[in-house]
Length: 319
Image 1: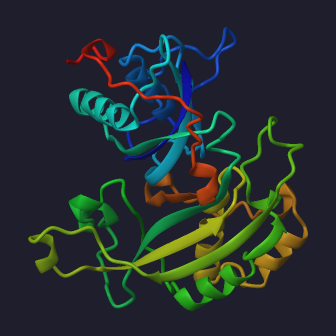
Image 2: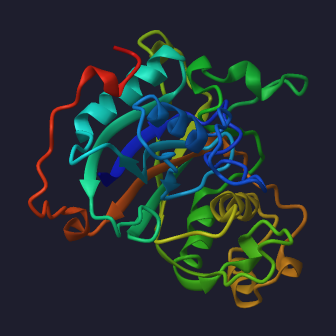
């Protein structure tokens, strides 16, 4: 019997090429240990299902981007009327990830209807971008590099910048123009595959609030030379590189390279020609997928007189 499952999971994306596999011409049923999707499929194969467990991600992230709570669905098939227990799947996957020392953690797994899609049933996605700016009263030697002042806990976890005259209020002012329904073509990464795609999206919120460093009991005794900011962005979907390009644009606003009103122009004239080439696309280090939300009724599975059987030791080669 085949059953569909939804899983919620977290990962640190620093060492991964991307969350999504590279699609090959000869099909998609192949292992890809350099991606989140591929590695999770390898873990599911340890359960010895009858089918290849193709994983459908709710959200695709670039290499270096992290996730606090992402999601995906997959189908598993067994002989007879038996189906895999969701808690058993979670435990076996986490055993596998622990064994190979990789930074993926399955939070939970649940059975859903066969028509459910982790991607298309999502009603919203929330992202966080962590930004740290050198405090205006701190004067560092010109010859010094900013990495010399970073807490080691923050390695590849936050975007640190050293820019003169950073004004967070201008940053917030520019962000107001981004909220709402717009064509975000100007803020997408251009390539031949996405040139003709529809790029109108609804941005539900764009909140900027003080953040804090990831610290240990030792580090907290040290004086921080950075102001931390948490940039929380919520919408149903986003175009490729949209968040990192929006944050990069707002940094240019904050240091006076462009006025806040220029954001409105970039939205009203959606084109790659409206993008200012001096704007730096922010690195993936500071970006986190925080949550994927669904309507609760979509997560309810109707059992339809199917009896779940306990799993046997033959389900996994790790027992």
